[in-house]
Image (cartoon, rainbow, N blue to C red; front, top):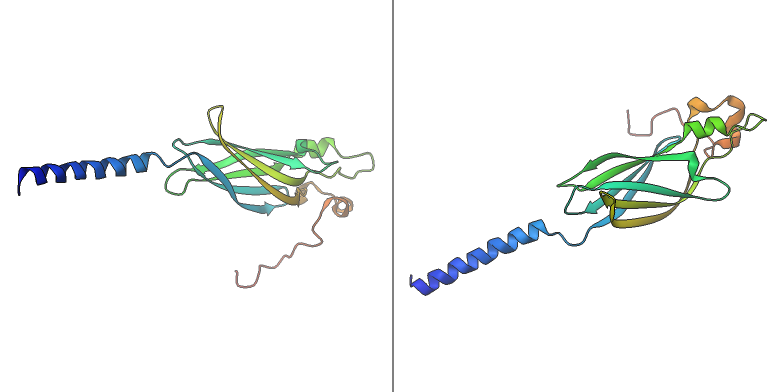
Length: 171
C-alpha cells in the first residue's frame, strides 16, 4: 500500500475516533422533561423526569396550588437520581403532615391541602439552573388515612372509595 493512502487512512481513522469521543462527551444542551406523575398512596405523589446533562444534576420540584389551597401544605424531595444509561430522576411530593396538624379548624375538619395545578422541575448543577420544565395537571393531595378520623373522611378525600381487593390479573 502506498504511503499516501496509508496516511489518509490513518487520518480518517483519527477523525472517526475523535468524532465518536466528541459525540459521547457532548450530548447537546441540558434538558429535562416530566415523563410520569403517579399517586403512590394518599398524600404521596412520585414525579419521574428524564434528563440530558454532562453532569449528575440535582432537582427541585415546585407545585402550584389552586386558590385557596397553599403550597405550604406539601413538601418536595428528590428520591433518586439515576445517571447513565437511563438518565432518570424520581421526585416525591408529600403532604406536609405538620401543616395538616396545624390546620385542623375548630370544628375538627381539616383545611383542604394543595390542589396541584402545575408542576415545575428545575435541573441544577450546584445553584445554576441548567433546564426547567412545567407540566399542567390537576390533582388533590389527599390526607393519608392514618391522619383522618372517620368524621373527617368525607370533607377531605376526593376519592369516593378505595378497593380492598387486588386489581384483576394481580395477586
